[in-house]
Length: 640
Image 1 (cartoon, rainbow, N blue to C red):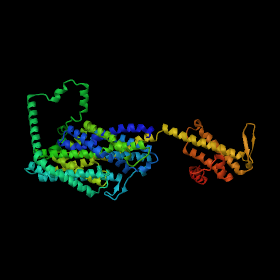
Image 2 (cartoon, rainbow, N blue to C red; image 1 turned 90 degrees about the vertical axis):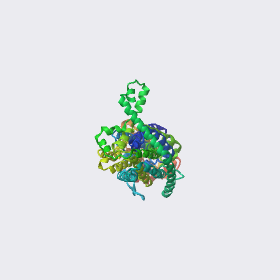
Image 3 (cartoon, rainbow, N blue to C red; image 1 turned 180 degrees about the vertical axis):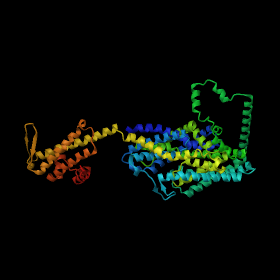
C-alpha cells in the first residue's frame, strides 16, 4: 500500500459519504418525487424504502458498475506514468460533485449525479493531461454512433424528449382505457396485472443490461436472451398480480379509503371543538436536548410538501387546471406506483450509488496496488464497505434534505396523481433501460423531469409550471461546467503549487546528478593528467593557481571539458547560491559530461575507459548512458 498517500484515502472516505449525502438529497429525491407528489408514499415511507432497497441494489449489483464514469470519459492510459496524480484527481472529483449537488439542491435544481461526476473527471483531466486525454466524441458502432462528451450533450435533448413521449403515451393509454370510463374503478383491477407485467419487464431488462452486466454468469448475455428472461419473469409476476388484484388489492383500497374518510371526519370534529393540534400542543412542552436533536434531524421527513400549492399562485394554478379522476380508481393505482418506486429504488442503488463511491474506488485501487488499473476487481472484497459508505450517505441525504427536490419535481412542476406517477416512473425506466443497452450515459434526473413534463402536457399548456422549466434546463447545462471548473480549481491548487514532497525529491535528484557529474569530472581530469602519453605538465603561479598543458590535443579537450563540467557541478551543488535550477540546468551539465565522454572515447576507446575507470564494461541501461551518438543528438536538439 502507498502509505505516504493514506491521507487521500481517509479524506476520500469522508468526502464519499458527503457526496452520497448530496446524491440522496438531489438524485434519489427526484426519483421519489412522483411517488411522494402523488401521495402514494409519505416522505417517511420513501426513506424506509430507500434504506432497504438502495442497500440491496448497491450490495447485490453496485460493485460491478463503479468503473463506468472514470473509464469512458478520461483515457486512463494517460495517467499510467503518474498514478498518484490520478488518485488525487479522483479525490477532487468526489469533493466537487458533492459540493455542486448540495448547491443545486438548495436552489431546487434537479441535476444529474452522473453528469456531475463526469464533469469533474473532465475538469481534472484537462488540468493535468490536456484535451487529448478526454474522450470528446469518438465514433461507435451502436446508437447514437459516438461516445464521450458528445453523447452526454446528445442525451440532454434525447432523454427528456423520449421520456416525455413514452410517459405521455402510457398515461394517455391508461386514461383512454381506464380513467375516463364510469366503471374505471373496476377496470383498474383488470389493468393492474397488465401494468405490473410491463413494469417488471422494464425493470428486469434494465438490471440485466446495466446493473448486472459485469457479473460473470450474465456478462455475455445478448439483448435477445435478456429480453426473453425479462418476459418470463414479467409474465410470472403478472399471473401473481391477477390473484393479488382479485383477492387482496380491492380489500386494501377499500380499507384505505375508509381509514382516510375517518381521519378527515376526526380532524373536522377536533377543529369544531377547538382542540389544539397535537403538533401545536407539543410545541409548548419543554424538550430535552436529545428530543431537540431528533426534531432537527427529522425535520426533512416531517415537511408538508403540498403546502406550496396554497402558497404559490403558479403552482396552485397548475393543480387547479388538472383533471382529477375517480378517487377510488386513483387509490388502486397507488399500490402499483409503490411497486414501481421499489423497483426504481433497487435499480438506483445498483447503478447510481456507484457515482459517489466510483471515484473513491478508483483512488483506493491506486492506493492499494500503487498502480493504475482499469477495473476495480483488485479490491472486490473491499467494495462492500465502500458501497456501505455510499448507502449510508444517500439515505441520510434523502431523509434530511430530500424534501426540497421532491417538492420541486413532485408538486411544483405539475400535479401528480398515482395513475400519472406510475406512467412517469414507467416511461422514465424504459428509456433508461434502452439507454443503458446502447451505452448512452443517460441521467435518471433528466428522464424523470422529461416524463413528468410529458404527462403534465396532456392537460394542455396549463398542466405544467413553465416558470421553473428554464431554471431546470440551465441547471442541466451548467452541471458539467460547474463540476469541471470546480474540480480543475481544486486539482490545480494542489498539483501546481510548491510541494514538500516534490521539493525534497527534486533536490535529492539534483544532488545525485551533480555529485555524479562532479565525481566523473574528477576522474576524467585525473585520466588526462596521469596518462603518460598525454604529455601533461603543470605550472603554479604566485596565487597558487595550477595550469596544465598537454602535448596531446585530445587529452587537452578531455581536461578542459572535465574542468568546465566540474565547475558547473560545484555551482549547482551550492543550494544557497542557486536556490532554483531549471531542467535545462541539469541537462546542460549532463551534456557537458557527454562531451567529455566523447573526447575520452576518441582518445582511449570506450572499453578501455570503462574498464580502467569503473571496473566493468557498461551493459543494459549503462550502455545507453554511454551511447554518445544518441546523447549528442539530444543535446543538439535541446540547444544544450
